[in-house]
Length: 198
Image (cartoon, rainbow, N blue to C red; front, top):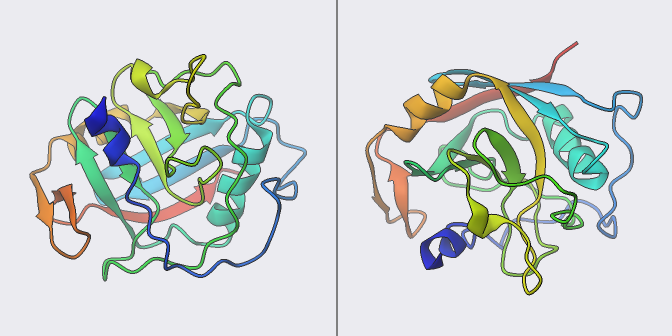
């Protein structure tokens, strides 16, 4: 469990904050309750269906980053086979782009960190998620909320491209001095573009 908690403590605090939103972003594409987003990577395309019904603040937060082009040309910087693939935070130069204020933790929404879900990374502070997200490669019960702890907010499902995630999970990883973190792909795995499906 220690390893899983440490995974999400890698968000960098030096990135500037764009705008205050008190944990509740404005509605983004509000007419679409289940937006579909294509995540084009250097290993192939992953398609996710987001669940605004269960995680409205988190979906709005993710969509605004998508529509702003925040995720284009970023790294999947944390890869642990049979656990998670995490990205959305760093450029190839290991710099972080400007961030919006953190979003409300919606981990009590009934969605679990099961195989093939997408969820938000955060600090120990439960309401500290910004742009970084991760894919669950297995049922990660330790990341779900309990009577004593907040969980990690699940906000959608992979509807195609799980084989791409498995390919990413199979890459060689090592300690990165630039990120001062383990489990970083030796050869960069890129998130080329994220876009809302029409």
